[in-house]
Image (cartoon, rainbow, N blue to C red; front, side):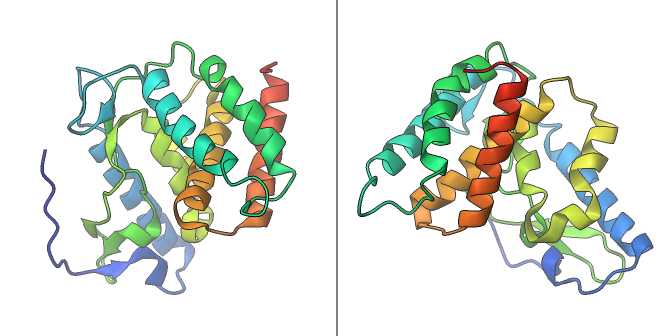
Length: 218
């Protein structure tokens, strides 16, 4: 598969300015329509990189987590850029991934990898979406994997995760998977570009710990 990007019109979602409730609803509905439309592209062969061999979702996600984990563990000491309290949770969370995702197989769909307001271009008058950019982390994955990006750039103000779940109800294990994906997604930014978001890393670690405790994951 080859993706070609060209100059597109439109305004980034995070630059739409102050919106009233009706406008915010229109933007939110347009985003969820677009995400569900993206996820309508199904890869029956399985999960993985767009041009890679298909594997199971737990196997593919564990490979991603292992790469992040090795990079961050290698920095412990003088080069560490994580709050100290996050590291023990990272150790526990890495060991827990097989248990958390055991038998997870919702069907491999096209995942953008950074589906958020900043990567969507809107018509500033109609609030229709005119483009989706930066598909650099696209893969065939779990549809829930894209939900962790919805809250970026004040996306929470649009109730995007809630809107999605109203359209696509999830099972009881959603919160555990959601915070697993959230935790490792943000750690990947630290691993790749040394992003410092200490307060958020600590909050993600706290939320994931609470979910692992809730579900008895050791």
